[in-house]
Image 1 (cartoon, helix red, strand yellow):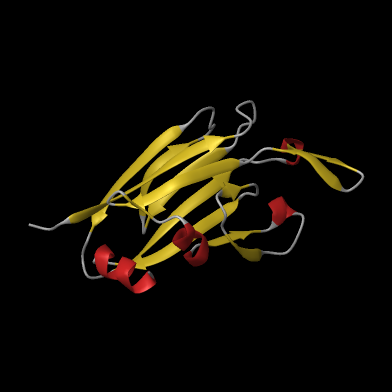
Image 2 (image 1 turned 180 degrees about the vertical axis):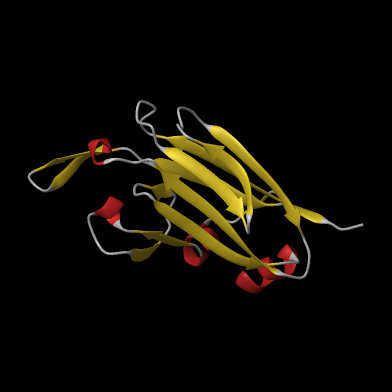
Amino acid sequence: MSSTVTISCILNTNDPATKLGFEAWVDDTKFFDIGHVECEHSIVMEVPDDEAEHELKFILKNKSTEDTKIDAGQIIKDSVLTIKDIAFDQIKLGHMFSEEAVYTHNFNGTGPETQQKFFGEMGCNGTVSLKFTAPVYLWLLEKI
């Protein structure tokens, strides 16, 4: 009998009128896919707690230039997705997620590909990636 770990988070948008899409993956398995985030979603993924390396990925898709309003070079309105309460087996990762996750994007095609820390908001089409190992409890102890 193999054990599993539950990965969970809350997804929301600051602008339900925009058609921001979102996917959640672990390794090669897609657990959640929505073409238009209009309201809050609770996302839950069950993955093996085996002795292996894994990658959690959050993908923002479908954002267009019309979803960001710029005046005199300053952003005055922007549509974003927020991801909060990221947890493994109900243990919230909090600041650890910001330290370990990488947000890769290219400013929706207006700049070079860049990698940044992730602080809970996705404002550009791209991928937030967290690499972790299982058993998850050992990985969590190493990161504390």
